[in-house]
Length: 105
Image 1 (cartoon, helix red, strand yellow):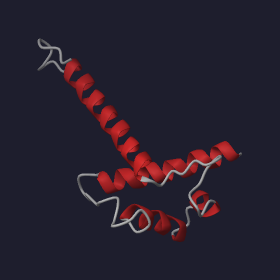
Image 2 (cartoon, one colour):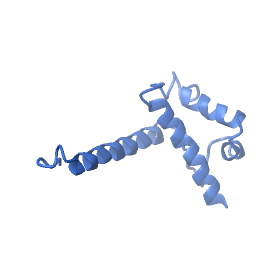
Image 3 (cartoon, one colour):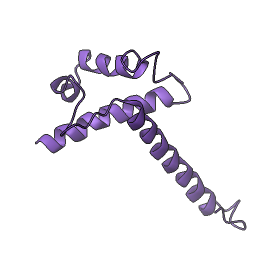
Image 4 (tube, one colour):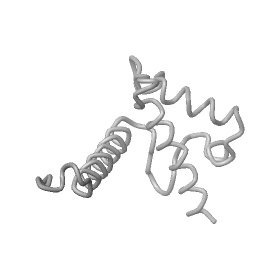
């Protein structure tokens, strides 16, 4: 049960980071301090809007001392997402008949 709740909460956090980073919104994640950025405000909005998993864990903490709201996890999420996007682009380019003669990477 706890694992599923943690996974759902982490999904909400990842989706919030990706929303901020999207081409359409380009919202900065952090403000002047770790406690007043757009990222945290959007997570708080998620609680108000009814995200049950975030509401159960108002401090945004998971097992042990894990804290999934800081700049390190935000940067890690962005790095993983960008790697996945690049890999998808490379796969599509390699499978394309237009670029079939020149395999990328």
